[in-house]
Image (cartoon, rainbow, N blue to C red):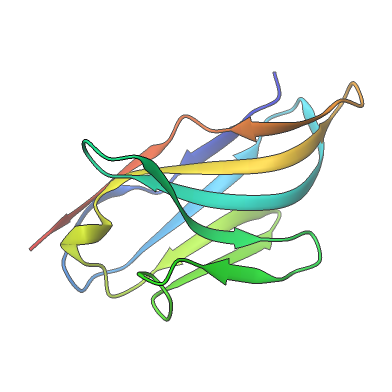
Length: 117
């Protein structure tokens, strides 16, 4: 099955840091563009950070200077200076080529991040 798998979420105090990771399942042969999304309770799923296959990163204004997206084997989201507004479920999404040569968007199940103030 071709999907992404997030890990690294948890409970952290305001001002703290977390490093989320996203790994590809065995059904994925190649990963192209990747994104991290956040869904706060009762709100829509919003784009937080993106990284193109060519290495260009973009961030939501609310996380610029605090979050860093990177890619080395896995896809990472380093989150520093966390605020209560960063609380939510974080999802990894990637445009991939599967082992059956199909190209598609693949989502993970999400990882919960809770920032206590």
